Length: 123
Image (cartoon, rainbow, N blue to C red; front, side, top):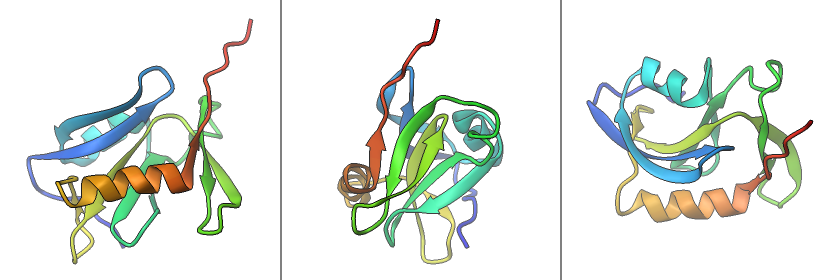
């Protein structure tokens, strides 16, 4: 089970419909993570070392669809609504930031398992 890290700051890849993909240093606490996704957080394990944190109620709350989630065979299995971010975790399951080793793995996981959806404005 992935848990939160008591470290002060972590580096993440953050994805929003408005800003797209950005690398950010953020406070490593529950309130910061909830602020990044706009609500309660849920963790989706993309690879053995990369986690995707998303708004667990994003679809229920009508947030913009931001990505299609693909399984290891490339088949669609879910969709993410609202902002999300990628981080790593240590051997004890604590969330840790991306570093020189895990950043390329996170980018690869993003390309392999998440298909970004364009933001469509309705009139």
